[in-house]
Length: 220
Image (cartoon, rainbow, N blue to C red; front, side, top):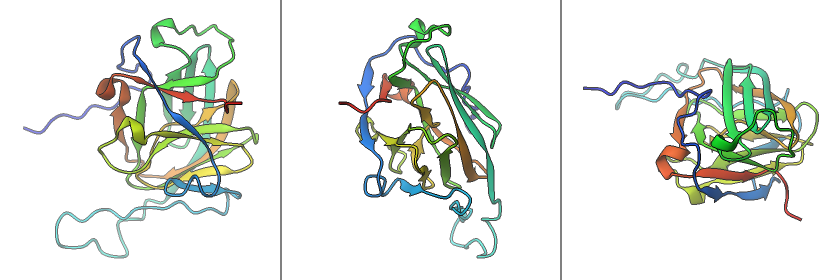
């Protein structure tokens, strides 16, 4: 009997109220450090998103002029701290998410105005059908967690790319990531991605028993 797949409930994450934290390495994004993950982008309008052809079922190939015609979709990705809770809203795919917290979820206060220096991340995903571009509307720094392709995700493979806001960040298809994280309490980003929007997920909290401690501030 085939298992019944259920959609991830991003607004009510299925995680414990408290877990150990796994520190994620913060890497300053430049042309060299983002190789393999994607590219830094100067002009969002001129940048083309990679679209992956539909995979063949067996030895008969997909016709060369088919299987990659879904195109792209665009919109604004809003990232906003509601107290200690980081919320994301992606207009491009009509997505609404709890991305993480600045403290353990059981201690999170939606009325807090404390300075945020981290995101405790519970989930990552990748898109096998196409790449994705995050481009800051206001030119302020931002952070994107990432890991190289492969379903055997492990904690040591996960990094956080700190971008200075002067360019956008494009990630290739199959790159593990999550929504874009602001370094202030609220930021918006142009989002361009594959219209099919296939998503493969990993509940980090369930699989590894930790929250990912993703820093938002460069150490001095």
